Length: 244
Figure 1 (cartoon, rainbow, N blue to C red):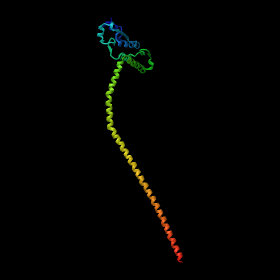
Figure 2 (cartoon, helix red, strand yellow):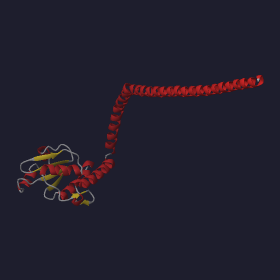
Figure 3 (cartoon, rainbow, N blue to C red):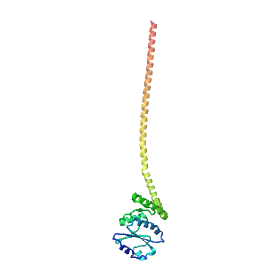
C-alpha cells in the first residue's frame, strides 16, 4: 500500500529542482484508461522527469487527502519546494504545454500515441497533427461532448440570426429608398437633357427646311417673273413690226 509519506520519501533522493509527476487512476474508470497511453508517451517525451502511477486500490486514503485528490484521474507535479495539480483536459498536447510551462523543459522528441514525430518538421506541423489526432479521438470517445458543442452552436445561431436579419432590414429601410430616389433623380436629369437636345435638333431641322423651301420658292418666282418679262418683250416687238 502507498501511504501519505510516499512522495516525501521519493523526493528525498531528488535535487531541489527535480520534478516527479504522479498519475492517480483507477482500473474501473474509463477516463483513467484513456489517459494512461498519453502518460506513458509523456514519460518518453520528458525522460528527465520521473513518472509514477498510483492505482486507487493500492493507495491509502491519507495520500489522497494529503494531496487533494478528489477525482480520478488526477495528475500532480511535485518537487521539494512546490506542488502543482493539473486541472486541464487530459490530452497529450495540453499535457505537453503544462509540462513546458511548469518545468521550463522541452520534450526531447514529439510523439503521437502510435508513431513518433521528429522535431525537424517544426512545432507547427507537429501540433497540427496532434490536434487532428485529438479531434478524432474526442469524436470517437466522447460523442456526447461533440453533440453538446453542436447544440450550443445551434442555439447561438438561433439567437444571433434574428438580430442580424433585423439589422439588415433596418439598413434596407433606412438607406435603400434614398439611394433609389437619388438614382431616379439623376436619371430624370439626364433624360431631361437628352429631350432638350432632341428639341433643339428638331428646331434646327425645321429652320433648315424652311430656308430651303423659301429659297426654292424664290427661285421659282424668279423664273416666272423672267418668263413673263420675256413674253412681254416679244409681244412689243411683234406689234412694232406689224405697224411698220
